[in-house]
Image (tube, rainbow, N blue to C red; front, side, top):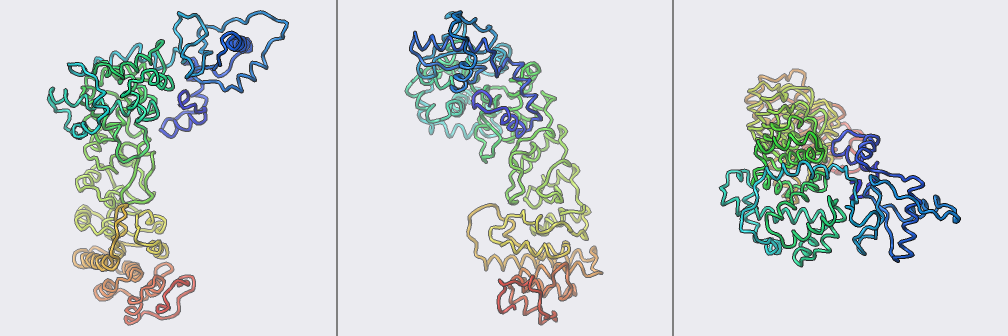
Length: 631
């Protein structure tokens, strides 16, 4: 971020915080200094810079770029600093050269010449500090990675033809992405490994060169020089002309040689967060290919991972790679790979990690963007095996954040239609069944899930629990493309809602996923009313003896909500079987006022026949939008 993207330190710190790293600007500056980065030059160094620039312009007629710690210094700043520290004209001494350890380079701008003019011609030139963690990783630990993987089989052959024809490998890649890929035979791996590498070359070089199409074009044309120039913009060179050699290998090398260079590119991009970032795309193709690559090459095996982890204690790059592998395993639901990583590296703590996308299917604004934990992400993706692995590794379900602070985890699971086995797993691992917020039984009634209702009641769910939260704000997280906000407004005006009220409020539009499907509103209304009536009958026939109807509150909110929805069958059933009053208010509403406010003409007529008071409602509840027949 600091070197390649040119981000300022403040932006780097903000990005690290977004990715879940607890750092501040002082810590980042201290770490950069320890790696040999410098931001300022002393006056005598600026005099040397001015002398070199003048000689280059006079003798060689070449433009000049000044690079300090891998970052190009703007021309205006170079001009200002050299003018400021320029010695008097009567002094003709040549300024001393800067110390060798100073990462200062004065060179021809990229694109006109690749040669650097400072130092002796035979000395190795670097555009980055030698103490950069990436160089330390290549020197000490890259061999460990190579020893932990399986090399591509012979015969050696170029992969350019396959790169130019991506459709040929699509079926193979679909096989690779299956979770049982680790059980493939050696011959099958020999067929699939090249296909995976071809796709990884596309994706990795596409990120490195900022264009996947450009990468394919340059490889197909074997434009080695242009490819090397593109590499120079992103990949630091461990020795002179490394990127030129790398480009030559990619343009026409053998598969094993390409594998080595690809691993370097891939590991650099992964460890520096250039690839497989946490932004939600819904597909995670890059993460799947990385996991498939690890599984096919044997890098996902426990013994191989233990070797990598052992070396990661002294290598920041290796540590970043381990973190990236774990993230890719979580994103793809690769439970076995994630389990091996957790066993191999005790530093991986799922509860302390963040930066995972949490997007719900039915809850509109309840996702956390990219700030979720592995467990939160796995739950929303229904990765049951992965959730089991994470919980066994110490992840606490009680720390799971919900869309609104008063929703219980089981309520989220039921409303989001998690599989029954997953819901039961949550229950067995500490998810509460009774509380003072929006509970699991409320969600079961509002979604009309009879199986969950029976199971929860059998497990001790309290049918008398009432939801007293900020109803309109909380319930409006439910996605309802066909229901207006008025549907949620009724919940703001009632005092609280119980199970009977949620049963009477059944509305299928609150449960559809985010799609553009058209719905017949009349047919949908009839089905919704029948479902609400079925739920109310279930309560009357099986659970009435377990509920307290003594104070009338249990039926009051149900009658009001049914009136607002226009469910005349439900109103009649509540009046007949529960002796529900048509005049009992709750909060700011009574049944008749609710029917008037939401333009339910048939409900108004029925309530008046049942004895509802016809005194005029307040203007604030009726409003100008009401139907004249209701008024």
